Length: 411
Ligand SMILES: [Fe+2]
Ligand SMILES: [Fe+2]
Ligand SMILES: [Fe+2]
Ligand SMILES: [Fe+2]
Image 1 (cartoon, rainbow, N blue to C red):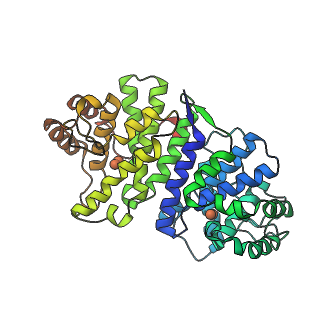
Image 2: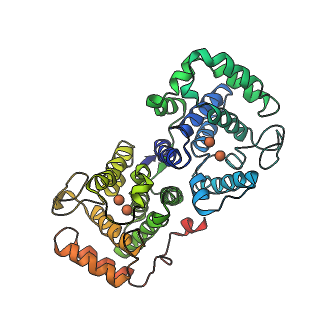
Image 3: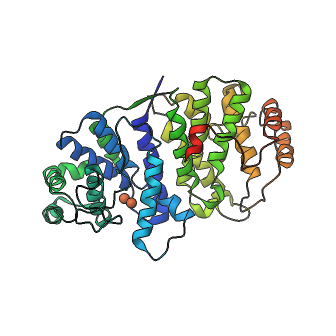
């Protein structure tokens, strides 16, 4: 079986855009627009299918590390240094994706300018042309988002683009953009059709579900989701690693282990749309706020359910708040509708959450966590046998030393 990596990357990029919109105030679908424009330019310039995939995917993820950088590093007064750090972290992450082309420098140099005034001081020709394409459309979209431009503003935009040749962007890139810019292009960048625009412009990208590269993809996904909030900084990564341990214990085959790891990485992808003030609220949530929190699993389902090859993964990921007595969410599934891996993720989600420090509770020890899980199992809400297995398997690990798959520990 294959997973449609191009569709998964677009959904991940959407999650990233949602986070950046909340934290940085960038306009919605910014990365998607950069990707759609780069795809159009790549086609005009005669890129091969693989080159087009690589360019578009790097454009989708050009700012993948912006939130990681903001939440983990302390930005200082040196603006160029700040920009360099998110470029370096982003390059590291994107290299974990299984490209068929060498993408070195595409994300690292996405703020460079032809005249050498970018954060790394590289001049045109000293960094990849693909990075120059991303940089050019990024600068324009940040200054004035393309989807907000009317046809009447096109002449002014064309003048600005023409003025970039040789100083902000290579002439070849500027010429391709001038050729591509028209009313149809502006229409194709509107929010409601942006994903279709990219889908039509780039080739299908399949990755076999037993490809070890999936683990690398999953760890990048987990990292992006976790950086949404300081309180959930390691939640996804640690659940994914705990899933890996349990898969080994149960003797799952490589495909199931890999898919389960990816499901764990994706289970809270919908939380990227949950307002941080609710995620980080100290104390009791109001009924309305809890309704907002519950929305995250609906989003996880909505964003994943139509991705070819992701059917099992979506089911496992979006069932982690279901309860065996039918009182869970999002769908109120009963016990006979929840397969083993869905139950496993539901148990591990509770276990991991109570072992973490949250605004409303301290981090519990393994024994305390097992006491809580046993109570929930006794109420008939989660699988008691799986709880016992978790008790035996997790006994020896703290949050910090859960074994991770080798490829995931490289970053
Ligand atoms: Fe950037
Ligand atoms: Fe950007
Ligand atoms: Fe959740
Ligand atoms: Fe979770």
